[in-house]
Length: 318
Image (cartoon, rainbow, N blue to C red):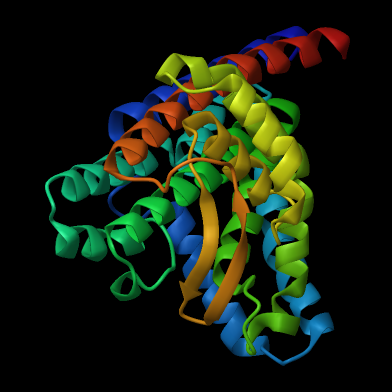
């Protein structure tokens, strides 16, 4: 198949995958990412040792398997532009989490606005791994805004960017690594060594997507009545203090765009972290949760257009 035809098929596939995610959200049954997680858990159970090298093997075997599957699917699809479009669309749909992120975030925003704190606490674990019982309404709002910001990069921007530059192998490899990081990439006693490789690989794959997400947050802030200047200033002033080399960029940009303060004491199941303060202004409330979801959608739309364009341009240069 000619290179320009491949690039068009990839671009259209990305657009169709985004449309499928927007229309249907995550597959309700037999989600491939959940299936991958089950396989990863079995591999972990079989080989786990409190050892960094074993963790490297764990990450290499599972992410390598995802790459191999992606290469096979991509090669089969190259024989037919329609097939490549469909396989790219399917991989994109599976990897994206934009609709689920927006639905869950908006639902918590409504519950907080209605004063239904218990319902908001019950739903919070759908978005992040914090202990909801320790959080009041402001704490839940802060957790949701931070999670929406981080997952806009992880579950929307990054899969689309990797799909644009590396097709199905890029999409599957990224989602595999990101899933492994979510499973074992913690600074807990069990995973401090074993999960090191998965966490560092996830950091590497998100270096560019996170910064792109922050930049698009600056661009999209005025669409939701936010401050592009605040997003830019907070990103460049506060992000480096965050323990994550990537999440802090997007969270800081969201904080500045919405003119709020994020960060502070954060309670997880594995322990307590004191996060740096990101942004300036008031603490977030239910209204900021709703605006964060809207901003996430804007960033997702901008990324979709950029990814499709990038896929087309790469084909022309090849």
